[in-house]
Image (cartoon, rainbow over all chains, first blue to last red; front, side, top):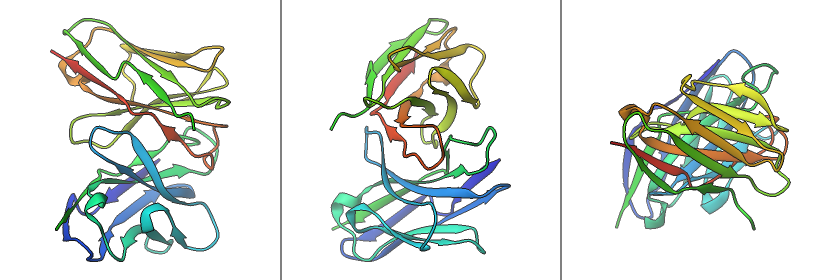
Length: 117
Length: 114
């Protein structure tokens, strides 16, 4: 089984400031890691994913995340945010091994990022 | 590009009524996932289908059933609706059910039970 903890439920920042949204996970098997963004009244859109290889992954809209296996973390960062980045962000994991955890996503509780002018 | 289509987008039902939610995956996608997102909650996995067979089951109530049809669309049937069933229901599709295959999400169906 997997679980995901997003350490901040809300993060307010000013426009053009850097931001970090924190995510920790636990799992009995190896996992793939994802960040999704949800704009109001919309579905989930994939920002970036870590499957293997370089632990620093870059995604859309200038976001990047770093996988830290020893700390079981996958924090999302952006060096300079825009008003349009205001949304809710979800960290998610998928188990790699076979069995019932094969394909489904397990999500964190979400972090609401609010960018102020 | 074609996306995942869900219908209806909004649905209002009374307690104890029945609801059917439909999901049309991206063309050539063979796997469908259903998630439930309660107010202020994270999405919770309900059930998934790969090649028209149930592939995984999560926290789906016994009052709910689902299937995937020959054209790969899926329907989530919900009976004896309760107030607590009010939520946003997402469908996602992928090509192949493996963990590397990206899930593309639909816009969701917002179900309100009165």
